Amino acid sequence: MRIDVVSLFPEFVAQCAGFGVVGRAVERGLLSIHGTNPRDFAEGNYRRVDDRPFGGGPGMVMLVDPLRRALASARASGDGPARVVYLSPQGARLDQAGVRRLSSLPRLVLLCGRYEGVDERLVRAEVDEEVSIGDYVLSGGELPAAVLIDAIARLQSGALNDAESAAQDSFEDGLLDCPHYTRPVEHEFGAVPDVLLSGDHARIARWRWMQALGRTADRRPDLFAGRTLSKTDIALLREYQEGAVA
Ligand SMILES: Nc1nonc1C(=O)NCC1CCCCC1
Image (cartoon, rainbow, N blue to C red; front, top):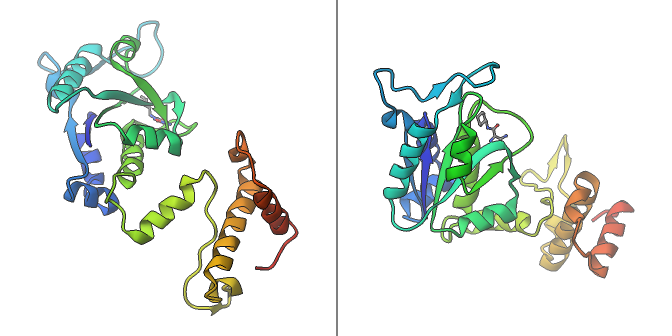
């Protein structure tokens, strides 16, 4: 998968490609990440990429044409069509299903805004979808782009080792993750649940699923919307809520 990032700070996003799962996906040729700077496509002595907003108000707005030319250059740098995603608080909220959908595409171009935003005419003419990573305002789209790249990289086949893919699975089913423990067994902060020391894999899997259901019910009941719980799920949830000791 090829991802082009259009950003005034392309080196920022490139840095994220150098570590961990993303870095490994790039090393393994599962993912390539390329930066394009709209300033390289700006005209005039000052190579302007922004200007004052019509209608007044604070801040600056990114100009259409440098972005348009940068997007055209990014598209032309790879093979085949590319979906253009603009990271902004006005976008559809990103979730794992959305990450799965975007990770299945051969190419993406991520548009990272700065200042007060991008001239709406560019958004309407060039952007296929706006995506938000959450209801808060950052200084630019680069961190959201890095978040999306990380989530996409994890879904590239071959990017994760067994342990990491297990962690991925725990979120893939749309529930919150179960709690995790490691050495020591006894600690002043508490002990490891006996079930995890039992060696009984079926019992451990049952406990972990119960914990995922229970924590989701406690912390993010909204994740159950549109989901039909099986009779087993309902029984496990009741067991969790009755404070069952594993
Ligand atoms: N939240 C977000 N989710 O995705 N992007 C977000 C963001 O806060 N982006 C910064 C803004 C800053 C002004 C220009 C447009 C991007």
